[in-house]
Image 1 (cartoon, helix red, strand yellow):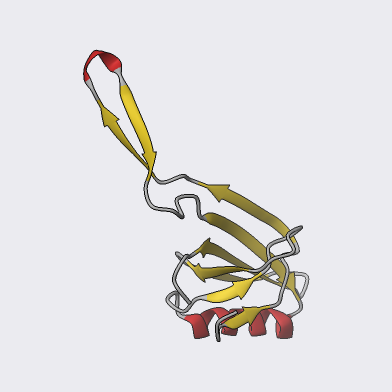
Image 2: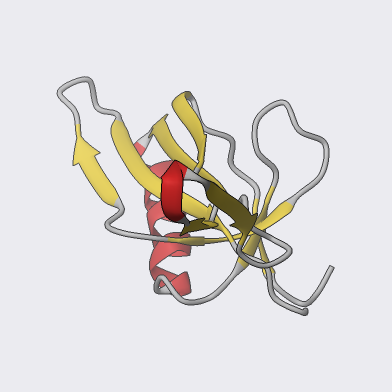
Length: 116
């Protein structure tokens, strides 16, 4: 693995994986069309994750995400997978203080493909 940070926490609940294939469609006459994948990595994983932790652990997770700034890639192993994937945070990541003394962190991790 390249010299990237490693995100070691696993989500507590609400991990959702979605894949939207990148496809180019050429539409021809008489309703005929042809589809082709855009690039060799046309099906990136997008994970929406939630962490419900004590304040110290939640602060560490949130600080890790802030250090990445939405641009730095990092390694993360998704639930029930054995191999890490390279991801970055996309969109907002959130930190919610709950009444039970816990803190919920929400984020979206998008798989990236670069030559590292």
